[in-house]
Image (cartoon, rainbow, N blue to C red; front, side, top):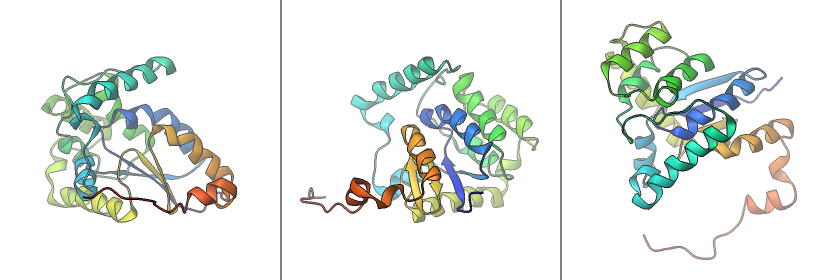
Length: 210
C-alpha cells in the first residue's frame, strides 16, 4: 500500500488537466488521491510566469495539441466558447467538500467535454447539481478561503503549473509526466540512480538577467 500522500492540484481552466482525467481514474483505482482545486492564475503570479494562452505564439498551438491528443486518444473533447476564462465560480464549488475523481471528472466534462461556458450561471448550477451542493455554496467566505489556502499551499510546495501530481514531496507536472509518476510509484528509487540522480542536481552555467 502506498504510504506517501498523493495530491492532484488542478484548475478547470487547463485543457491538459481535462485530458489527464482518464489517467487519474486509473490511478485512483489503486491509490488514495486527494484532489486540490487551485487558481492557476495565482500560481502564475507567484512564480512570475505567463500562462500558455497569454503568449500569442503559443496560444493556438496549445489548443491544437490539446485537441489532437484528445482525438488521438478517442476522447470526447470540445474547447469552451472562449479561453482563458474566469474559473472562480466553478473552483469555489469544487472547494465546498472533499472530492472524488468522479466529481472532478464531472467538472471537466462540462467545460472540456461538452464545451460549456464556464462562467455562465447554467454551468455553475449544473456543476452544483453534479456535486450535490447548493448553487450558491461557492459564495461562502469559508469556501473562498479554502481555494485561497489551497493555492498558497500549492505554491509553498513548489507547484508552478496544473495539473500537478504530488507524490510525497516529488512533483509531476503536466499530462506528459503521468507515465513517469507511475514509474516512480513502482520504483521510489527512480530519481536516485544514474543520470536521473545527476540531472536532479544539475548546476546552472548561466542565468538571464531579470
